[in-house]
Length: 489
Image (tube, rainbow, N blue to C red):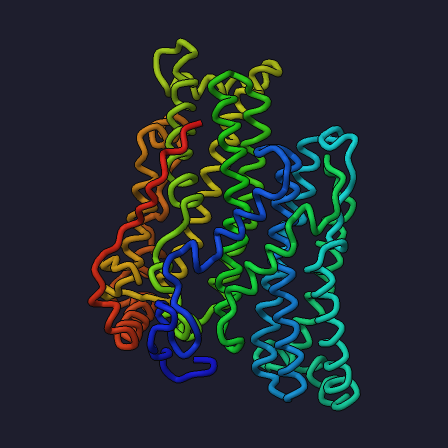
């Protein structure tokens, strides 16, 4: 572990709240990730839902969360450099590289969406630039402090060591990782800043007001435990997807209604938006999988409370249940309305005749974008599996909500989603497999063999997790219950 040898102990309740040595234990997923504040920031934008303007606001809100976390990481890295703790500095720098990757994705989304909506999307409004936000200013200040510290301690203080490290060492060296990480992030920053500068928006308001920067800062600050942990970064990599998935859901609802009304160009446009918005959502999962160590997760696991092992209303119910079902059911109904003898004939006719005329191409585009969207869902589910695999392991390790075997439960959810009737029927008609693996391949047999290295690593993780958290193994199952009505477009 990074700063402790064993998970923190549960302490006495304070003001009715469970506490550990690190701080409060979250009562729910929504409390942990401050969904209330994210919702408040979303509601305060004052733009219609499911529009170009709402999309711009969501991308910039997600970027603000990234920048606030980069500011925090830069400050920690500076302190480590000044203390000559290069190993710890390299840890934080690698996390910064991950957040810059996420910002790169957000910048790409913004460019793609601007192209999709065209030049008239925000006619008569103003422009929005990332440099106008409070999070950007905070990051520039923190980065300047890190640069000054690195120059004084590394370039001026130990020039020969720095030069030798750059010239002869590799990523197995902590100092090399710090120096290499700094130059990677500096280069990446110029790209995402360019992509998020001068973005047309249909409202004339200041950037901080439009994205509710103060509210977002509260949402980020509220997640901080002991700064030596990576709890805040863990939460941030959930907050960014929450912001983007809420936006994607609105656009998917528009797309579903458009399919029902045969407004196919609108359907295609908003399906593209959904897919683009999920790219950084998937990337957030990947950053967490690559950078959060098992022990680092165990360090703050108790503080997650029942939030660990579940998701929000927007992701679990709206995106992956309600809208998912309506989208594929309505797409099947639309395909069957063409008067062909079977669903297979309808799908294959659309694909075969896609170049016949503009209307045929549009029908093909709607089907294709639906498949692309499900591919993004599949990518998310795949990346999401890294967390229970890496941090819970095998052998019946329970999640914090009492799921008997965390990784197996997530595998089953993925398979259940792919069994949805309309989704499966349309994929069969298009001769597209929904399988997530090739079970009889030599590679799959090697990896899934009970004696494989992967299986052994999963076993070791499971044993360690159950040893550190015996009380969780006594936890009864607490299923996700939102009480919210079905989201029916």
